[in-house]
Amino acid sequence: FRVPDVIANLRLDQAWGFAGISAALHDASGAYYGVNSVNNGHPADRYGWAMAAGAKFNLQGGDMIGFNVCYTEGAPGFCTNNGVWTLYNSNTSVGFGWIADGVFTTGSQVELTRVWSALAFYEHIWNPKWRTSWFGGYVNVDYGSTATNFILQRAPGALAACGVAPVAPVLAAATSTTLLPGNSCSPDYSFWEVGSRTQWNPVPQLDIGVEVLYSARNTAFKGVAFVPASGSRPPVTVIDDQGVWSAMVRWQRNFYP
Image (tube, rainbow, N blue to C red; front, side):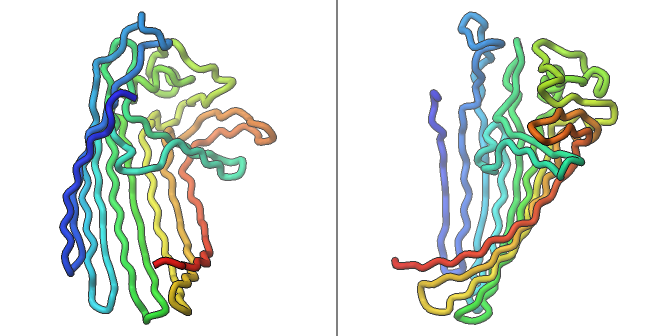
């Protein structure tokens, strides 16, 4: 850590709701080439940035509607707080992805990762004791062609599956995913979520709610691959999109204000 993030926000609040824009500057510089030694040199300093805009509108009867959009190059944490994920569908397939500020290899500059996101919500007031909201969002992660090639150079099986010659060090296939012909050969991925929450307030300061959410993960490296066994789980030969349903019940007593 060398340079703190620099963030600027501008917001307007009115009776109709609020609107705001923001921007951020983020240090996305790399460490040393190869092993962590000052003798190896390092890529030139590189800064990422992000911009976002959003608004909320107050509607008749207490209803609300709002949105937020974000775009970044080299500062993905401002557009999503999602990081590395791995999601298995029993023993038949697996989906995974990750987000990095940027990618570099020996002698290269830092190639910044591009991420954009969009989300929206609507809340309806049925009566003073009941309300329901609907919400959803989408995130897209794009490494670009140069960074993709850097990643494939160190992916087991990429020569046969993707036509990319390996560059040392390449991880051993026994301990990592090996790409096979028929794989998409792309580290890019996306995910989206939609959900709804209904809340009951039988008395003031008491919230009782039920929330249902569906999350879809459009995996990186979709297609044929060999993912070795882990513990009691047998090996998997397909990388595919995954989806998860979840539900939550909340009982919350508020004492202030």
